[in-house]
Length: 170
Image (cartoon, rainbow, N blue to C red; front, side, top):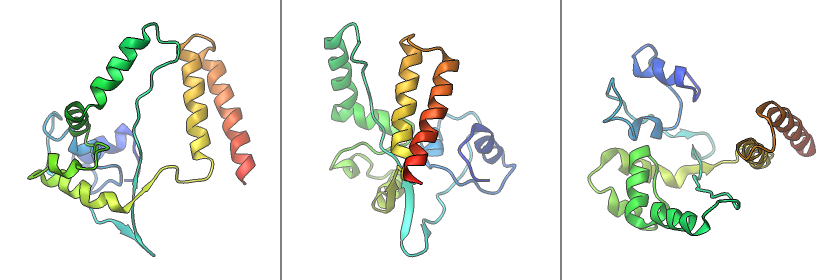
């Protein structure tokens, strides 16, 4: 099964399919807490002309309209300090953006595998207009959250803007 939807993952977790092609953090970060814990392993890194695996960069954001900017700054500092960054990233199965990240994962086989594979990551965006699509999705989602657009209007706008962005690179 190839995909990232919860149904695909549940098929794999419940032993209904042999394998799934998805991001490893879906399993590593939850392997001790997921209700039907199971044994799993990383598959080989895909290769043709070169070895490559996918990856992405996570981020935090605070609205420029936050009612308490100093609290927002304190929150960003809290979640990005070394200790909390390692804790948060271990919990979700990601690697923290630290030059000495490996020192926080000594003896943890799954994370050692992630560290080894990090040098083969082809970071998103995978296609030319995907970074623009992410920006469009974020802008329209924020418009819904701030009440300046209805969800229906935002979805219509997302679709139109993404089609326009795709047309510019085709």
